[in-house]
Length: 152
Ligand code: PNS
Image (cartoon, rainbow, N blue to C red; front, side, top):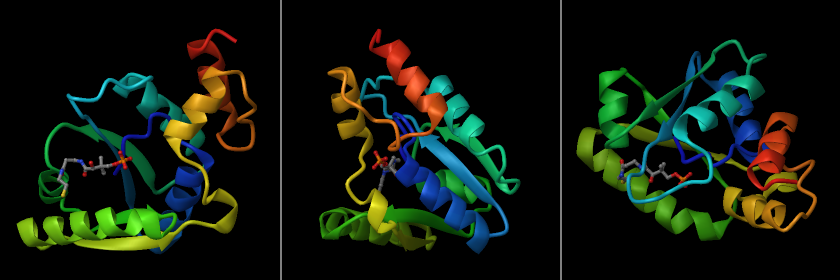
């Protein structure tokens, strides 16, 4: 689960490794009514779909509401999350414990590969907005979408 505004190579690394660990992986774009993103939910889904076509047990969906409700409705066995650094850990642990408390669903943390530790969608957008080079941080389809979004 995530915002994926937009998906980065860090996300894709976690999605790929999750696809080896689990029989089936659903990437869920959570809709946050209070947060206006750069890309629409449909665009985010398309970008993830196009970047994961070779991963046959990965699908993409979106949801508005509690993640645990999506998990219950779709019989998900676990929530998989990437952890970049200690700074991610506090909030991720809190969410994992809250989600576990709500329905008993468990969370599996996958450590980010060192090459991707510094990547965040927010920073990618900031750099791209000002014309900085984000090739290598995002897949080619996202690079093209960022160029279009920022008129480069
Ligand atoms: O990519 P992000 O923005 O770090 O992802 C955060 C996300 C979307 C996974 C988290 O905010 C979430 O689970 N939202 C759904 C609403 C929900 O279940 N909130 C309670 C979390 S304990």
